[in-house]
Image 1: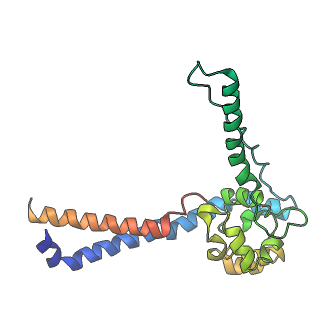
Image 2 (image 1 turned 90 degrees about the vertical axis):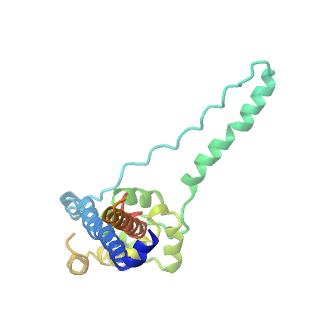
Image 3 (image 1 turned 120 degrees about the vertical axis):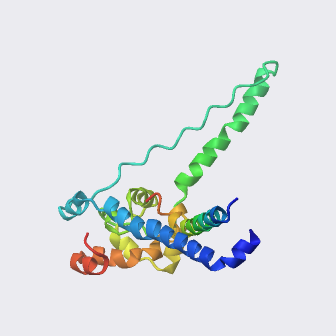
Amino acid sequence: MITLITANWLLYLIALLIGVVTAFWIWAATGREASEVDNFDGDDGLLEKAGEPVQDPAPAPAPTPAPAPAPATPPAPKAAVAATAAAVAPKPAAKAAAPADAKPKIPDAVGEPDNLRLIKGVGPKLNTLLNGLGVTRFDQVADWKEAEIAEVDQYLGTFSGRITRDSWIDQAKFLAKDDIAGFEKKYGKL
Amino acid sequence: MPLLLENLLLLLVTFAIGLAIGWLIWGRDTESF
């Protein structure tokens, strides 16, 4: 095996590179196109231009804390069971409340919400996430500086890094000014 | 194992490793937009 590898190392290196290039083609090249198709179906732009801001429905209400677990051992006195139930119950409630309350410290949006999905790279999931964080307008995003970007980025989870990678600020500047021509020239058709 | 088969298998494995590296770099966060 070792002799085979040392004899044909160049061949294996080429196979490795082909693998990397294939992966790039699958996920980086076509993935981006697919996402754009997903994100920008015809209705989006038309609705926005017609003056009807598209906003996701209100997020589902926070899940109610799970009921206290039934006592496993019946012989325990009722008072003791109630005490443990009271001690156990607040924990899930506190856990569920934390992510709902957590919001980035950024300036609030003023005015009607915009359709953030017009920003290339923002899909339905990110749109819902951003709305939940209080980000609803293009001018709000356009005014972000390094500090705000870093602040919001902490709340994006797997989408972390997208703000700079997909140039949200620059895109939002065009969209906030309603400069569709400038936007399309730089980022492609809306 | 015949030499050719072993060679092909190793090529396949290196290709898969390359694919995995590429997925780690570009594929991980493009799955759910």
